[in-house]
Length: 239
Image 1 (tube, rainbow, N blue to C red):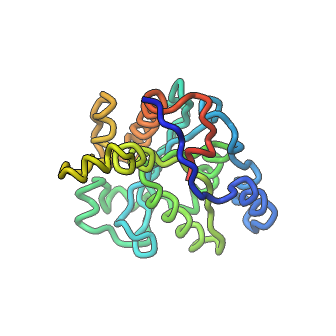
Image 2 (tube, one colour):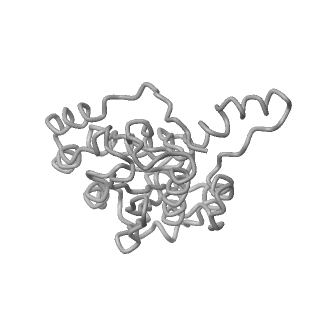
């Protein structure tokens, strides 16, 4: 079933990025903002995208740190695995035993790892001009913004398509989903693993930033194929 995109209040990202390009003091940020993002009316089938995932020491961006970053450039038709990037970075916060059990990045792994500032230019260049796709934007966007602000004194924000949010529209917020809850059915899981399973996508080992980035790219491709038209404007999908 094809879904009509919901109209939600989102920032005017085009104006925001343009204004930040002129105001950013750091040259890396200025170049990133100057690259902009696809215009909101761009059909999703024509948009250059990059799936982004991070592993962190916890869930609070102000108390925890990024420990790894993975990204995979893609379109609706294919993923560009030769252009994938993956970094383990040295966090400013101590690794906890609990976080290590999730992402399996140990003290030995981060001992010789670069600091985020060392790879920031490469990261921003890989994201520049592309529409960033994540599964749960409340991790990647605030963590990167807080981390960059702590190092440069100015943050970095940009539009994202959140595949978890798209799943929520269909399986948590639709009339059918609300009816199922009303009759006592438990809400559908919108976690990455369970969302992929609904589309028949293969299971991947989770909590690795690069693998989860690829899993997110494939999930969006499946979501668009099943629920949206290729000419759906990106502005109807991003947050």
